[in-house]
Image 1 (cartoon, rainbow, N blue to C red):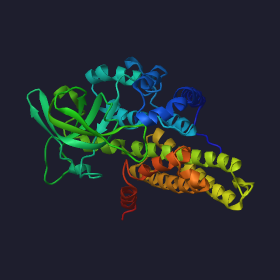
Image 2: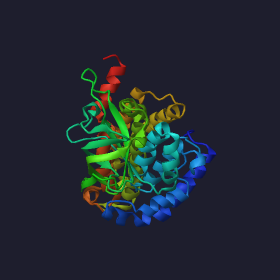
Image 3: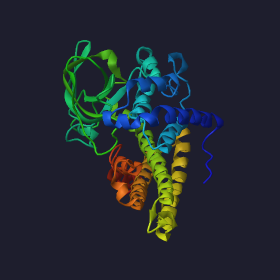
Image 4: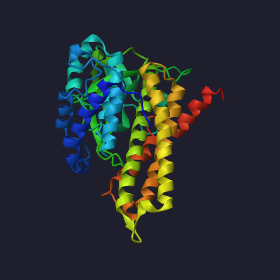
Length: 382
């Protein structure tokens, strides 16, 4: 279906992104999968092209254009080429907003140029062993000691944790027995601070080109100047960015589901069974027709949500609806497409296998499907 979401500027950026992905990502992607990460020089190259600093103000080396649709284009072009861009999505769409909204002027001068150039890589450390979706249950602590805060605790499932130069850590600075959500604060822990260590690099079933780590903080002294935003306001800050984080997952889900359909069409046209192209079988036609329809329905819903987000009007409940629908659609579509590959669909040499394993986590991170249903139900007064 025809889309009317993008302007000429977005389409010009799309061509830049497409050229970059085809020339500098696709040929190297198998090697990056083996390494488990994208080389730092590639982040710097993206910085040179203006891809990482689009939303950062011009005075700090950015593009000065916070239009979320540029992020959408970048995700779509990676998915079109059947690759991902490592932790770029997390850095641009999940972490950067915290810096943009809550960094003071001194922090902006200190960190923004490196964020725009790709010299500084980031991670956000929220999840802890045993807490999962319960952010109010965070046990990592930060205690004031003179001009420093002393952080102690452990985090897990941290995307980009092995490479990050700056880690936004959610820690408890006070306790209110009547309200567990109060008393959480954000701190920027920098690489090399004594007591900050990276533990295991976790082996995942999918998303092989982005590292996922366990992080440990033992008496880490963080200058008070590294607190991001106001003390005790982290839970509010985290909630403010969740609609975009969930929308971001939905963007990837729809783009990857679309690519699954397209690569399956190509495969079934070339693959023969019983002397006949698989695409000529009625079952193949019906399956792909149904999958294409699901993708288009999700795209329409998603594009409307993106437009609302650009206007600043996407509600938490609608963001939950979009994430729930798009990620569940992705699971159905990629599974049905893989089935049409037969035994070859189970082989990692075919992109459909990677699309399948990568898809599984989208119903878990940024809030599970079950959490999305809870949010939606509350909006219905239930």
